[in-house]
Each structure stands twice: as C-alpha cells, then as structure tokens.
Image (spheres, rainbow, N blue to C red):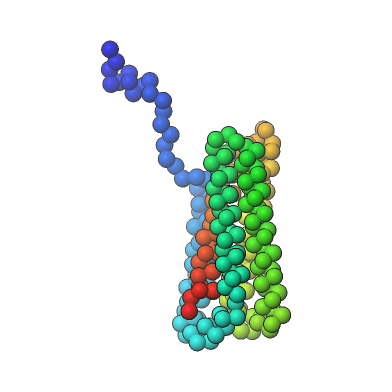
Length: 196
C-alpha cells in the first residue's frame, strides 16, 4: 500500500516557475527602463509647454514608416520568444534560425530608421527644431540599444553553435534585452508618432 509520503517521492519533480535570465540582466533592463522613463517624462513636459509646435512638427513624421518599424520589431519579438522555446525543447538548430530571423528584423528596423532619418534631414528637419531634437535623441539612443541587442543575439547564436557552451541562459538573457528594446520602441512610437 502506498502512503502519501511515498507517493510524493515517486512523483516526477515539477519545474518551478522562475524569471528567465539572471539578476544582472534584470538590473540592467530596469536601469535602462528608468533612464528612458526620464527621457519620456522630459519629452512630455516640453510637449505640454509647446503643444502646438510639437503637434505641427509631428505631422512631418511618416506614421506609415513608424507602423512598419513597429510591425518589424514585434515580429522580431515573436521570433525571439520562439527561439527561447526551441532552446528549452532542445531544438538548437531551430533556435539558431529563429535568432537569425530576430537579428534580420533588427537590421531591417535599422535600415528603415536610417532611411527615415535621411528623409527628415533632407527636408530640413534637424535638431534645431525642439520636437525633432527629441525625435533624434530618443530614436538615436534606441538605435544604440538595437545595436547592442544585435550583438547579444550574435553571442547567443555563437553559444548555440559551440557544443561545449550551449547555455540556454545566454539565449534567455539576449531575448530579454531584445524584448526591452521592443517595449521601448512601442512607447517611443506612441509618443512621437501617434500622440496628438
């Protein structure tokens, strides 16, 4: 006869829920979110003081380009999340392909943003305009984060290709950082392109 004590001992261990990545990555992400939060609050204060000027300047941005970049980054987040699932299931080649797809979306985002910057600058919208000074700083700092994210994704792919390394935690941390980049873009898109 099985007692409750032996029944619990023979049951397979259940996996506890945990946050992906490690504490250091979470500290970095929360620090970045705090810094961007300061940028966002500063932008809102300046916008409240000069609402008409900001609204007039904002009309020169292409919402279509902003939507396209948003779709590109959200798609990249889907690929990144699927890569983590693939790593956890042991499908390492599939995870590598998904990380490459994530990076390709990041590169496409960068190219679209470079095209948009070129278009705005060639039409004379530079940092001399208050709205566009915020636009270039916010999107520029975000692009720096995209570059770092691409490096992190590259490190994750390298880890998966080396049979002696293959640490799922590296993939999780890279994807966490990438999700933060996407979250920041959604807020930037809403503030700069949509808010009237």
